[in-house]
Length: 465
Image 1 (tube, one colour):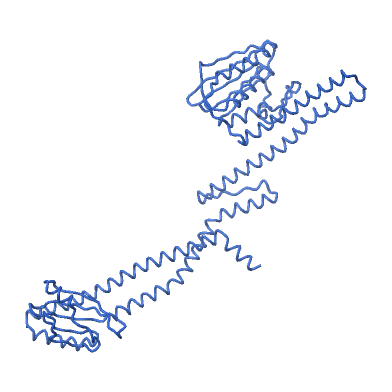
Image 2 (cartoon, rainbow, N blue to C red):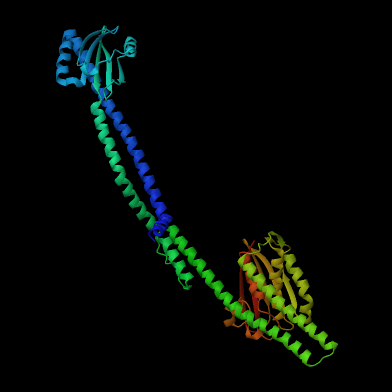
């Protein structure tokens, strides 16, 4: 159990963010302290060099004021006060040692040929750092001319420098452990705080999976990304709930609308079999069965078209379409039906109007609207189709002088299988307007309706140009 809990936390995003934050913070701190340590060591060495230069300048001044005797006296006095940590030498230009003090700890330190060469080239001073066998600390040495024939040579042990830097280095190493844990705590706190919104989304999803479909994530206006995730998640849940509700309603409607043709098919077959009918009766039964089956196929195909269009399963083809030609073709198709009811088709069209879209879907949209306008019109009425472009929008309007739609039915006419009471006696499956709306929405457009009882209806389709 404990191992499972450890593995669970180890694989969590908050744990990984905490570890990454702690490592990055620690490495950054090590880098910053290393740079600081480097500068400290550099400043320490520069201070040592400044100290040696001050000594050189002091002895140069003594040489000008009191000569060799004054310099020698000062060397003796300083060597006694400094102890064994510093050595002094006076050297000729050819490297011969005239005077040396405190050399017991610096045996083997010879005169540098590079220093003599540099001084011979009229350089004011020369520094070098050397290691002495058997000594743990290096020595910093300066050479400088204090007269045309004499070189002052002084060396100082870097023991104090190393001890100071060692203390500083140990302090850095001791700081790394608490720094890591502080960084880990801060990283854990930040990760938990940042992922709190994600955890709320997760908990909501768990509750929804247990059946609480109405549950939503609370948007607390804390962080833009978390609020965006919560809003998107809630919108997805709203859409899923709407789809589930639509599926339930569709199942009920499908069961109702499919039951009627299936019942008729069964009744026709039963009556034919019971009545011992002739071949003509069987032929008529077959014809009626085919007609009812065609209605079932039409219902199923239209439902599939609506579902696929709303879900975006089948991508629309994008090609230039002349809306005017499509409207004229639809009018030619329905002209015989309109003439039977003495309905006049009126078109208010520009010469041409081209948009990008799917030709078959646009044809289906226009024919559905035109078919409804003729079907629910009165004898001797009119159907007016107008097309125009306003700014970046295309407006397609189909108006009729038919029976109209009751005001209470207007919010529902685009729902699947919905038919107004005044239209129940007319043939239809109640899917035409649902398909029209799905197509318009797929084109990123909108469809609107205005209607008045016994005065007609007006359907307006607005599409991007």
